Amino acid sequence: MDGGPDVAIEVVTRDSRDRDYRLKRRKYEEAGITEYWIIDPVNGSAEFLRLGADSRYRRVRLEGKRIFRSRAIPGFWLDVAWLIDDPIADVSECLQELLGS
Image 1: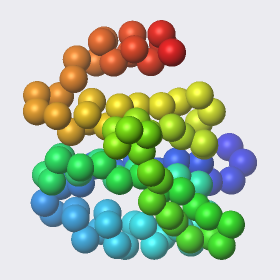
Image 2 (image 1 turned 120 degrees about the horizontal axis):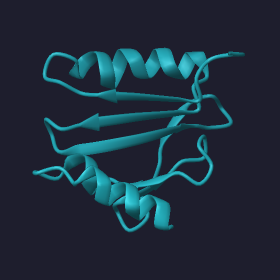
Image 3 (image 1 turned 180 degrees about the horizontal axis):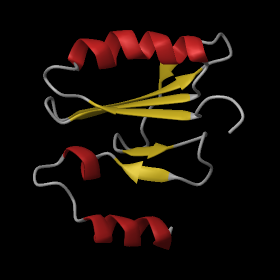
Image 4 (image 1 turned 30 degrees about the vertical axis):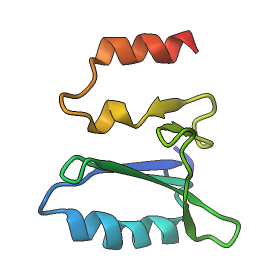
């Protein structure tokens, strides 16, 4: 592999909150990781950050307040509800929706 990852994904737990939202965010930003996705089932939220021209993370606005489209993974998108709804979405149904687009 040449260089670091394009995407970092963290799933927040009660014990990792500070690490994921502050420490890892800073480290990933410094490392130049293009996108940082923070999935927080504890709060029922997801945050998607993208590195700007100034090498600082900016929050990505979701389409319709629920669809995230990655730039680091061309063509990849997801519905945030799949990650945070309770119960979580059926994996095979999500895959079918992704493949159908």
